[in-house]
Length: 133
Image (cartoon, rainbow, N blue to C red; front, side, top):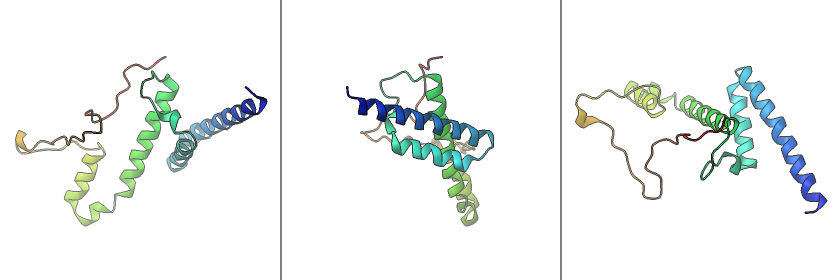
């Protein structure tokens, strides 16, 4: 390999370390919007860092992926808060959609139906089963 490759790799790793420190600082300060923006920037620059298919993510990687997912969920929920002003029923639906409330049904026949898309996995959520310490 040539020297240019190592310079680019070192530069990227330096940037990644700096970005993770900024994310951790934003989370400590409870600046969730900044942390979300930083995770998005990280994802856009290196989407493979968030890919867990066929691998056993380290605890650090799993934590960052989980944080990014939770912050994205928070951002989505905040963006849809206007819906509760349209209809309290729609507001409750948004809470259920983002996992902040459990749906209540009159009978078991009213339970949620899982839509199946042939190109997507059947699991509703990704579960980290094999996380390295």
